[in-house]
Image (cartoon, rainbow, N blue to C red; front, side, top):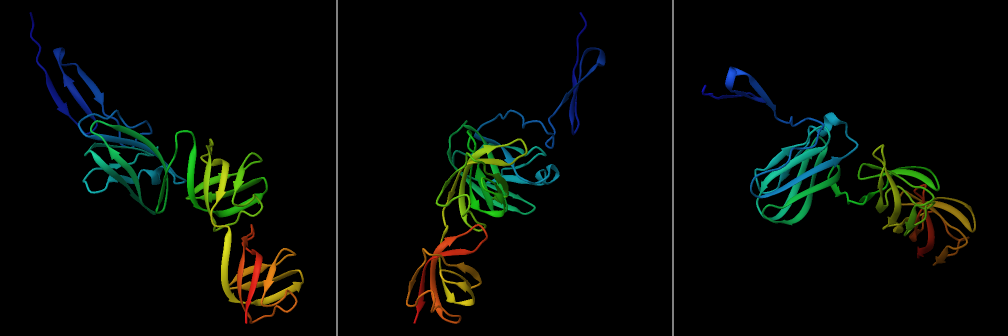
Length: 275
């Protein structure tokens, strides 16, 4: 009976195994920049795999790294936004995301030996938000607001948000939504990467500012002016203290309470004149 001998040669991308008849078999290792999912983890410690969703191009995604704070463990993100971290010591874990224009961290909580966690996150600048299994849950500042109710569009933490007639608003209405306000978004990710909001909860619509009246115009009850560079408008519902709508004048100091409007102005609910 003929005996077989084996020799094994390792290259950067494959393992060549020579056996009987010197016929080679090629076993290709997954490329770290391949668009396929990260390979199945193995070994001791906890494992975190994940997907990054962002407006960045695939070439930019591949320049991101994910690291475990306080350790030497890190992973290069591939062009599909996938990454894998193995051998993570049990305990509380913080992930740090770094790359061009990205420097953000995410608390995962305590991981156990052998635990495998797979996450999806939205990353933008210094903000990283975990995407829930049943949809998106984002928190951030409204920017680039456009469109008319009920179909408005804007961005939150770099993610494109769209509203519809089915979107519920809390703390404001579709019409009073404005750039610069902090919102929490619940919704579902669409095929183009945007999020169709099922709920928009506005946190800081209320405005309280002090300053000097300038550029006073209009007639009572609908007057307009600026305070500290912010356009102010009054209405029949505006309450005046220390003066009346008719005696309001440029140069007087006022304290304004009101709500931010979609055009960035403030509709005053109270104008208190400092005498």
